[in-house]
Length: 169
Image (tube, rainbow, N blue to C red; front, top):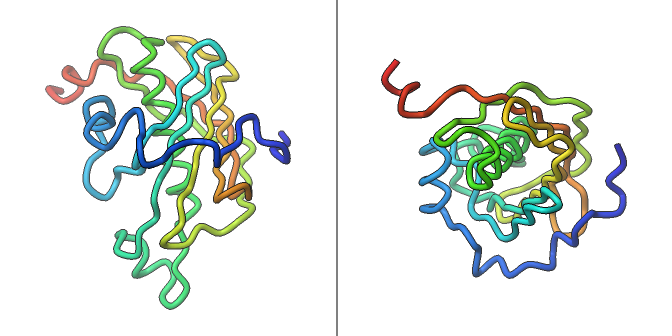
């Protein structure tokens, strides 16, 4: 997997006017509080199965104090989680699965961390569907800071069931 040339220019979007902000993301993704890893969605192309979102890394984010004191870095696992949440948003809003179905994380493959992400920086996530199906999805996710690649991974998602039913279980 090579991400030297971006599929989409990650700097080409108006981040001040996302197509989905935090409230719209909350209406779709169940993550809350410290585990809201997306700040906004700026592009969706359902024909090409591409979605672009972002996470603004802030100095007061829960991880900044302890990872690592004096030199805070957004943990790689949280970059991957942001990518997985972006894929889940696509799965639900583009009606890939059954109505109300929640996409769960099935796994990560081919993960590489290339650049640090520090508080005050914006991690832009570009997810491109490799296999988009109601029973199994695979997205290639590349995270950027500006035009610099920060990480890449293949994210596999599997349906967990309907969120309302899962909450009642």
